[in-house]
Amino acid sequence: MIKRFMPTRESIVQSRLLRWLGPRIHDPALWHVNRNSVAKGVAIGAFFGFMVPVAQIPAAAFVALLARANLWVAAIATLVSNPFTYGPIYYFAYRLGNWIIPSSRVAAPPRLSEEGAITAMGWMLDRLDWLTGIGKPLVLGMLIMAIVSAGLGYFGVLLFWRINVILKRRRQRNARLAHQRVTRTP
Image (cartoon, rainbow, N blue to C red; front, side):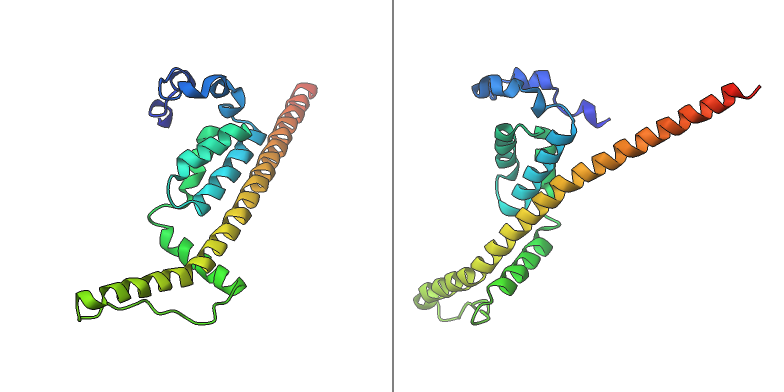
């Protein structure tokens, strides 16, 4: 059902907007579902899903194009961060970064005073100071989470793929043995 909403490889290749990519867009590794291209796509998508707060899908697609990873998987894997998960992700990233580089002071969010335009500049400077105070631990935490999730995604897909292949071969072997037993017994 979902396939009918997704563009086909041919429609993407023939797109005028993507023609500037030239022969690179014709690379079969970008479209085939195999162990390596899917694992690379998950790793790239997870990295950009955690790291870049804007333009995650185009950034992941560009890197997937360079790395010959599956484009669709890379784009979909960026959705690990979405409007429902931004809060917990940023909170955990800040806590992780603050644990690694603890700040000397705990900055409270600035409050808007009632004095008006004279203190507006001071309020803006307080807000900027507060943002830079949480910015360093937040960026460090996001970078760590992005790298760890990319590694876990890559090796997790390889492991999942291998387990599925082993189970499929085991089922085929058991079916073949069962069929041989049935045909041997008179």
